[in-house]
Length: 108
Image (cartoon, rainbow, N blue to C red):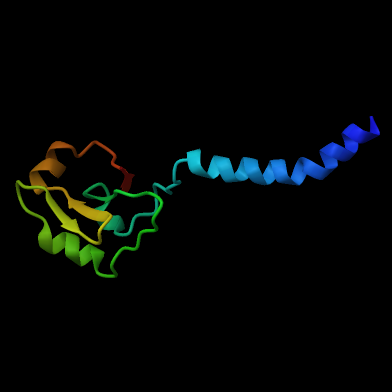
């Protein structure tokens, strides 16, 4: 009995660290749905991340970028870096999908 207890005490920290390490790969990235970069433009754009292991950074002028590049009937995609794309929904798309809720960040 004491050998089993000593074995458990010795390897318990390793098992916990291994468990936390493995679950970090299978847990989807969390996102606070109420925290948008541009609250007044909520549900009118999306950020697509094509490699979820890399951190993303939004440009400081993202709201202005969205407003100046929006088109009436065409969805615009702007490459922010090699893995991150800004998708700006068209005015027609926004009107047709006004009741839908979109995620600000989509991991592909």
